[in-house]
Amino acid sequence: MRLSPAALLAVFLVLPSGAAPADLFGDGEIRLIVRCDDIGMNHATNMAFERVAREGIVTAASVLVTTPWLGEAVEILRRHPEISAGVHLCLNAEWLNYRWGPVTPWTEVPSLVDEWGHFWPTRALFNEHRPRLEDIERELRAQVDLALRHGLRLAYIDHHMGTAGETPERQDILERIARDHGIGISRWYGETQAANIYSVSPEAKTEALLDGLAAITGPGLYLAVMHVALDHPEMAVLQDAHPWAPSPVSAHRQAETEALCDPRLRQIIDSRGIRLVGYNTLRARFLDRVRNPNFDVPAAPR
Image (cartoon, rainbow, N blue to C red; front, side, top):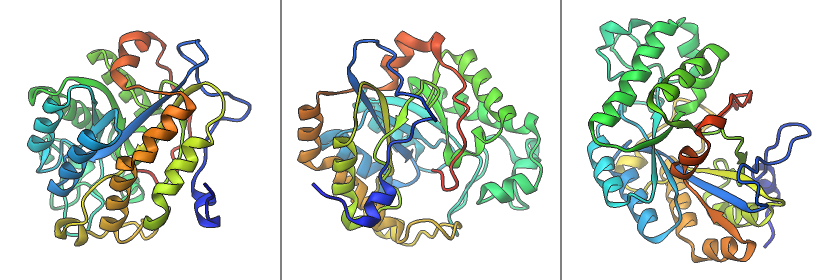
């Protein structure tokens, strides 16, 4: 398989300078986590995720608990206990005309919200309004508590759009929350990013994913972060507040759904001897080795 020039720019393996992929197991195997983000955002996202859980490849689900379709997402994960569940810790609501806010009463975390009680749409706006660390920690803890009350068996946490992990002080909050609940943090295990197809054109996403995984060299732990949804009206009307975001979002996310369900993906994984793992496995064996990765939050995170 060959990538177009545009796809080559967007598909990459990211390693810290001079570093090799983390080989936590020490057995020379290639291991891959396939993480689907924004689960629970809406019905179209949940239905795509359930299709991937049945027909495709996914090992971890990062769940938004601030959004209206959380209950449906929980039910899907109950039907698929093999998939690691995590809380996609959220401090932003990035969609125009589809806004959400904290699970804590907004009057108790006023530095996190606008005049309507909604999260700010971008990291820049969030930071401009000088969020208090006490408010951030209260809200993030409330999100984890809500997930647990819904019955999710949590293996990890991560951060929506990078906001909750953007500064050392916020990373300390994540680590305290994880430690208190005995769960891991995605990217804190030394995962190497594999096959980033977020900005690849919809028609090229499947080939980009296949080529990205085929290009993995050497043993270690790799992570592919995906965003799935169906190209339905509730997705088609969404517009991201970030001007750089891929558009139309519904076409991009439908294409990522198709990529994860393409039978050639399993063939690549089998031919390369890649072992699929979730955060349940890492939590059970390596919780005491979770460390601050000292990574830079990317300019266009999800």
